[in-house]
Image (cartoon, rainbow, N blue to C red; front, side):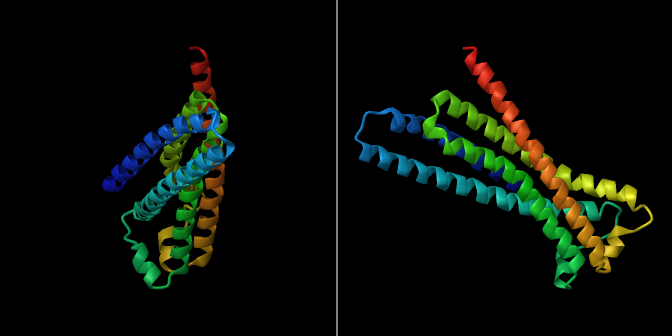
Length: 220
């Protein structure tokens, strides 16, 4: 997991540097006095570069989200010392475990997707903004993405903690092992539902960071 986190950090760092260069290039495309055909060609190339960078970042984060999400689920299910092998249960056609596993992956992707969405919004407007506005927007977007990655686990952990309090007379792990689909479905629904609330909060943080950075830049 540490190796994957290091790889993800490298991808994000490379993406940030590349996007910074793209932001500078976008200003040249937007403000240079070239013929309209050349400007259209430059804009098309710029959009293609941006799309490729977004795809690479999204793929790297997707792989990280799947592995991190299932690893967290394993730790939460086995926190009481009971061994539950997720993949073995899935091979045994345990629908309850499959439901909660799928919900965890969807939750991770939903929360982290809000961070990627903020990057996409900045990139889509990069040619219409000043260089400093684009740079501060990218910085805020990447901060938003890191926050999303950090709090994605929180959304899932909250559900398990709350359910522990509500169902203290029920052994959830035993129910999941017994393929109790109702337990898997309610856990899965709660995990996905909470992820939407967390994702909305992450988006608000990104807008706040962007506003602070814009205010700082305007002071100079």
